[in-house]
Image (cartoon, rainbow, N blue to C red; front, top):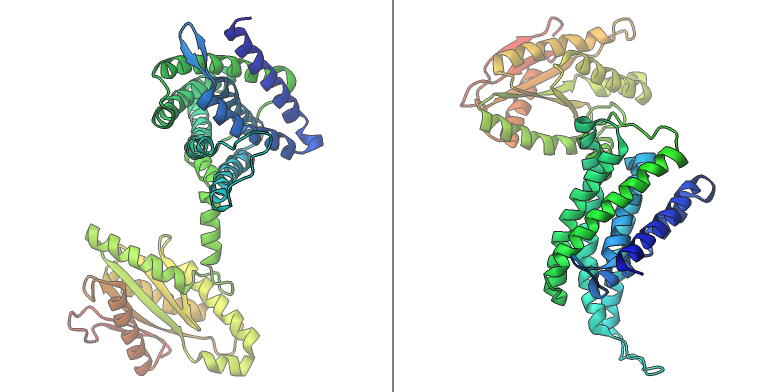
Length: 429
């Protein structure tokens, strides 16, 4: 029996067994399929390093040609029938599990010399070599898995929703990338001859044809319901696969003040610096307003802390309803808020600050006998400084000037010397 037929038989057996497990995922659970997908990685790497057969076009390894290519086809199938959030689980599970195995084998080096049983001497040199290949192969598997999914999705806009050509092109491109880089590791660590590079590539292109055909046939005749179609852009798929979306959601949720819904002070520290950097590099102004609720302690004392919390929420909402769409509102601490306005010069910021001052008591019309008011201190880059700490200092000083002047007013500072510049007095000061 020729080597080509043997390889084809292996590919068919691999795909049939794995696709049966995949088909049974609703009854057995997806974990059975994922475990079967992962347990063969060591043997794949071992065969790819030491087991080669010669075909007319060069040396090829079943571990790389059949098993590894089949694994990528299964990952692609999982994505097609499920989604990016599901397929990223085995991708990261394989990544972490393989690195863990390498670390545990490395720790064995710290143990006493092993006993020789039955004349079998442990080949630690092979383990070391395999460990390096496992690290390299695992990194490539991670890149290959994400790459094949992104390319498959990108091809939708180029050749439509047909599964076979998209799967074939995606497999062929990613397997070419993998062959070149994995052979580089093999050649460095095991002195694998160059004939394995070309021979392995030819075999992997054949594997791409076989697995793309089997995948398309499976989706047409076995799971013949319409595969999931994603309207998410390729970058959205990438964000999901790399947990970037989850990170951004976590960052956003951890940056929100739970009482008012405004961004918190920690988020201000980070965003303030980046906003200043953008303003200075682009030559655009940046204005910052510090807003303090007047006599807030008296509100708590007169109406209670529950009512005080409600005042904070309503003030934050009034600010949100008044600022521009790109402005950011932060709860700076206690009853103080900060509004950060990119691209807004000082005179325009004074007008916005006055609208904010007027919006707060209007939000409480009819709900409190004496609607709360706010005092606002304003500063602008570059007139009042060139770093976030300096403009916060200027805005804070102007805020206290507004309080000394009677509260319920806006005080801005456009003087380079830091003297109080323009002042806008509220109607009910």
